[in-house]
Length: 230
Image 1 (spheres, rainbow, N blue to C red):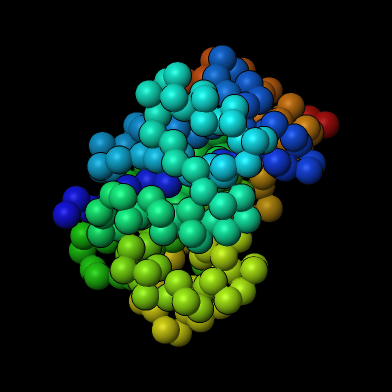
Image 2 (cartoon, rainbow, N blue to C red; image 1 turned 120 degrees about the vertical axis):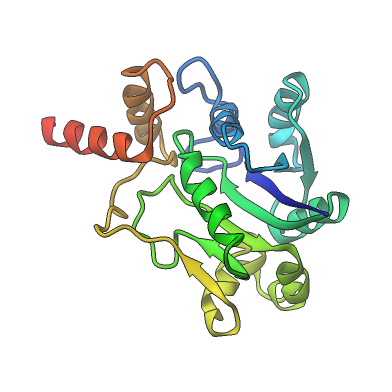
């Protein structure tokens, strides 16, 4: 069994920003930007884009197919079943959950959590419990068997099966969870895309470095600088 598969959750049916995953950031779509950022990691065995089988997500599937990116489709609302389907196809000890609305996600956060997973046997490794990284820098690594062992509980609750990981945080006493934290809390900073305003802002900060890789800390500082200039 290989160790790590990264699943990028992507969809186009956002009410606030329709067709979000296919919006261009610099010279790439949002889903491609996330994929390229994560691809910089040498510690991941496979990356899969997980989208729905709804017609609104045909564009994501077709884009991935054209670019040689593995894309698997499943229920539009039952994301837990989407993950289950992928993990049954690919046999990995851990899966990494990354949001498709995080184009400037820093793969070094992911690499750090993977390194920690090799030192101690955690069920879940994350940086969102409690959050101190900016929004858009969220990484969650779970043991596949932990998901499978708790699916019966997750599938009973719409909120849980739509979002997958909150079940584990709401029942954190049952699991061995490691949370990566900063000394300062930057959770109020938004480096993700949920609205047209977010998209315009991310385009602005990415354009400054012509889509070259920069750390989350660089983007955090640039965000604060631009906010102060308003």
